[in-house]
Length: 216
Image (cartoon, rainbow, N blue to C red; front, side):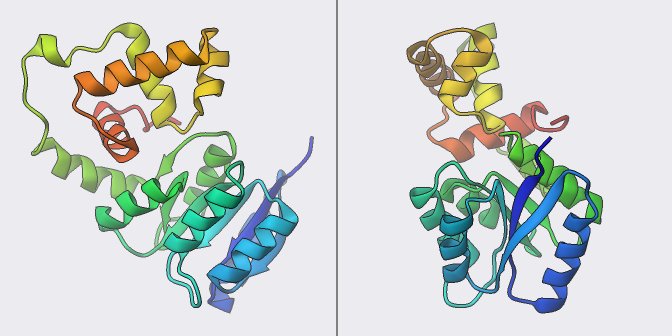
């Protein structure tokens, strides 16, 4: 079985060395490259085509947010896992909108990063539990109002939205549910309209409230 190919983008050498050691200890992972700024991360990712880029948010020349945005335009198949000390959900929103598949805090336990790499490599969205709890707590106070009938998703709409929130592409959802991509898009649009969701961050927030991301 081939190993997951990981590119590390982190400007602090001590932190990067620790990440390399952690990834190197995993039997199913290998570090294929290292970058110490955002521009180098993009260049190496294009050359090496890793499965996952572990991207520090605060880097010189081009920060992790901008690097994520640009890399997803150039190499959309590469999964990006962002690494940061920021617990503010404003960072979470920006990074998800830029195309990041995951968000892990530097202060979390090492095994959290390993879990996150496995999750995003498998096409899922991974959010650090600390951030998720904070966001869900705030979102609970701002939940949209409406009658139960207006907010009830059909079984198929829920299946589609759950998988998309976890990071699966429409074609992957279609294959898993054995329906057409056009049908997936219709269920996605209908479900999001029912729940007042306008973009990906709205969907991920709803998924967090529903507990859809807790067991991935």
